Image 1 (cartoon, rainbow, N blue to C red):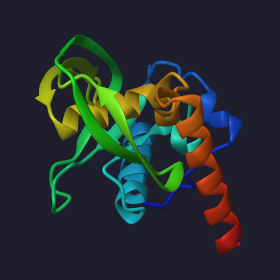
Image 2: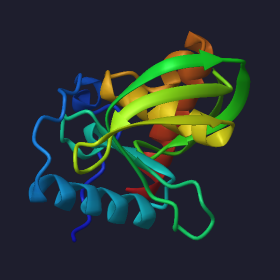
Image 3: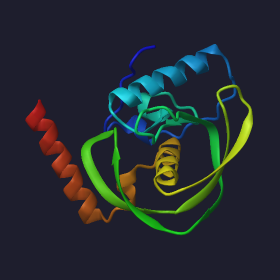
Length: 167
């Protein structure tokens, strides 16, 4: 396994629309393993392939305390969503930046696993937020896109200031 490089905003590749996963082979399994290693090391709870410059419809997530509930979704699509929740989100592509985002409380998702087998998942709460957030990456949408122009501008200025301080 190897740690991958996470693209950081404003990298334009974060806006790339991912293509479907069509080959479920050893290379895909290795990519998934590398994505988990990268996500856990960051540390994060979700990572879309787009964030590591692989433009395939693939995401990994693990909301557990111990990192023992890994979830892989290839070609995910939301079948149903309802309710509403506001959740403070962060993003590995926006280090140190957090904002309240309004998302569906409950979602039903269809996807494929790392072997190409189809499944559905019914989730709510923080895991539903995580999956929606990562699925947005697959279509080139970022969590800051949900914010008002003023809030987005303030957050991006704060991120730039942090970047300059750590340079």
